[in-house]
Image (cartoon, rainbow, N blue to C red):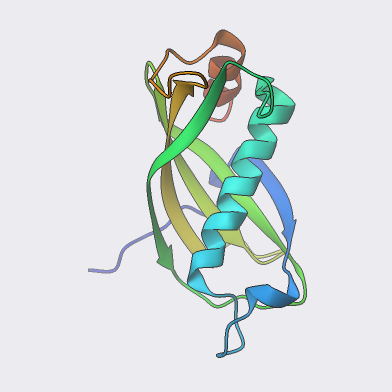
Length: 145
């Protein structure tokens, strides 16, 4: 049985990332570990811009506590890529994201992953409820059916 993956229209937020010279590995494509940099960068840019997350002086930050990825097609430097982001579940102090990496113009993903943020107090590193503005931003990008 072949696994099916969400296509571009399922993702309410799309961010753009640029590949870098150092992203390619010896095989001539972006190394698998770099995909997580792309996902994390687009998620956090969204949280800063839409959710008011203050990564430098705020009382709350999100720590990634789980991540996984299925690699479906290679991507390479040079070029831009697009990262789709949606939320699968918004809990009290955590959120589960569905993420996907797309080549520009492609409906089918080159990679699909999942990441979990736990929001913590910056002074104690202990979980805290997701602040209202962040919660609203996270709920605004719930995964489309």
